[in-house]
Image (cartoon, rainbow, N blue to C red; front, side, top):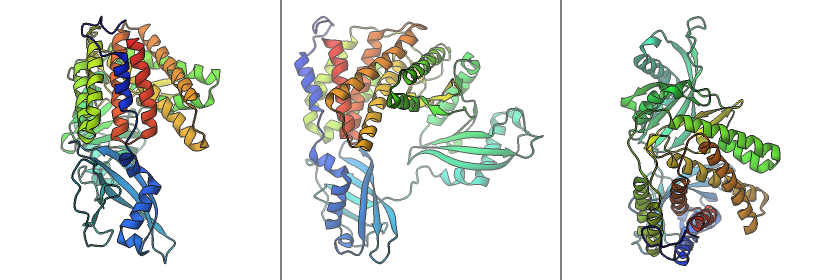
Length: 494
């Protein structure tokens, strides 16, 4: 299809390709702020306690760097390992780092006069363009101490499950052992609880030995509970093809969702990575079988008929990615023109293929949300459940499959210290595209869907991955996502 028969004339392919490649290289000032050895060396020279030898800075690791909401800089955590000269023992201190782009005003070079390690300590390091200060404990999820205390959590779970399910009024939890599974400071925390009951004879037949609780900073817990309840009461709750967790309770005061367990041996992401590593016909056939089962489960989810969740269109997704890019171009203005060309391209492509009808949609469907257990599958994480065209789930899953497979290759390279040549990376990318296309074939055999719409959503998803590589300062991931975006757009435009 040519670039002029789409309702709105597209920029030339060379212009679009140039726009993609404008995003291909992170600037030195940004990359340098996350290079552990460079940061350690600069801090050793810049902070009096380290420069004088009072303290020894042994190691520095930058983690979770993210672009600020207003696009004025990056904020992240620096884990610094420190030892005293007289002692061989070391400990880790977490510093909050705020990276300020070259065109933004820098703070006063002077720092506080209080000793390093004090809550009030702060210092701006011009060579890194980073303002460092002590990272204080998370206070946004203030309920965490209650949720991780055995007795308080035991009483809370017992009361909340009884309140939400009167049939369980006889439930008596004797002991509760919390286990933090995932934690995103200030945003959400997932905790597993190993439970025992007052007596085996008194325990109900369906009382679980393990439950999962999630607490959120916003209202996603309420939405996830309502979505899971609707799905549990739909035919999907009785499906033989896919398991979903039973929603047990929601506690509004604590923004706490409690759900039953799903048996799990491995995630589909883990099976993907192990199959790629083994690279045998048997391992790849086993992976394809689980991809087929996932497609069957997703088709049943899309056919569940529940109407919970707000409508979400491709235009809504485009608006979100555009706002994300605008934050980035506020920090790196030279990317603005390239971003405009890319959005013009995607909007033009969207005029050529109308969307399919909206249906119940997972919203964040990736291989990490698919649990495997003895040949069966389960779906988790319905925080973003919505009404959307099926291409939303399909494209995100396919792009995530490719992205996760490329990430696995990068991890293998870091272990062997033998980076793959560009041809090897393209071979891996072609293999992953084939795996993703097979998943789509499995789905289309069950439910019709516009492949053009899947490709359109996929291109937008990959553009977001490119921007997230800037957002999180991931130069190696950026190389792969740029390659992915070029190949998707070339397939659509040439």
